[in-house]
Length: 441
Image (cartoon, rainbow, N blue to C red; front, side, top):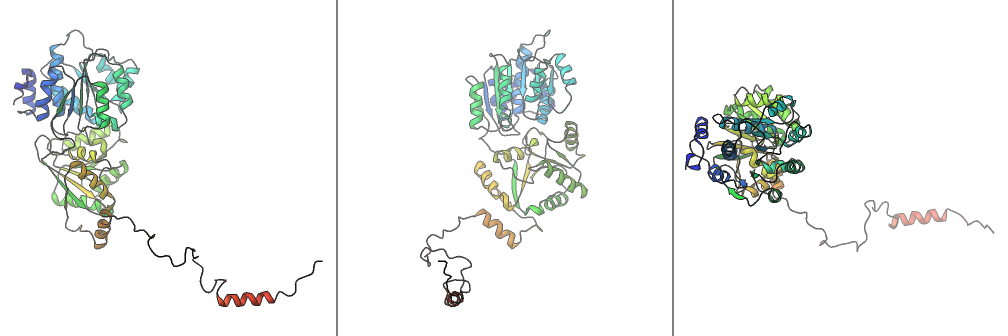
């Protein structure tokens, strides 16, 4: 199968060639012909398999074939959950549309809207947007969605996880009833299927890989290590392995900042990227990481999707996510486009339950390895083994009761028990010392 056999225009084929691609990926092979026919699509593919090109190429061809050169309303709307993913998709749209007369732009929060509004007013065929900023600009009457022919929801499951379902419904209400709808997601859930039923009309189901699978080229390892020694292990792995490009995931923003600071103190250039960082700081950190001026990027799950780093060799889960699907998205940053990669997870005693959930989702056991100098002590080993094989406490109800149901008080000793022989004699002595009863008559 070739891109040419999929029915794409020569201008797009030239752009694909310049990107260095020669053979379509499974998701591209299955999705592109269906989209070109004008069908609604419900597509599932593991991260890093070329989903973006799978919908970008056909919509560019559709718009090119039906474009009015004098009038440029928004014809295709691509909704995505994060700023980084929006920027990445826009880069793809721009690269693939170099040889066709298509204008595109991207809008997202965290930056002033003035330039975004100016770009839209100059005419835009393809708009890439995050839901919040799109609704903000619509409320300001800076854009109209009345002429949208194609709606694309990318990473739809992540949008639901981030609470965008209401915004999505508001946006859909602003669109024409007659349109083509494409819903792309790395995973399918009940919520996704419910959303799809309300948007898609007789959709073609496209699946390029089993749900929640991880890239075959990714080697997965687990290091069992106490929480207090994780930072030291990360430093050891990076320094001794002489790793140049490492993406590390933490569960919290403060955790990302702390780890980046510890790495800097060990002369390992690093930067943190998370929701509290300004958009300019996030863009600068990502740019430095891609250009190898920053050796380590420490991120929260905001970066689990939307980061496209070519040939990224190493991903480290400093802390495991509590949602097993997020593990799939995190390690999907490596092993992309047929390249090999390594995903390492540092697992403390408290995280063993997360490992079980991930293994259940993946339907495979994760390999446990040891790092010299970081072996668990016998006490730590015993604690982790107990955590992984916890048993309910045995019941005391079958033990014989020697006190015939009477609860014996903890201070009911021979010395202070009023019924003991010694205390009974003392009580009798005190009774006789009281003297005769007074006659109150």
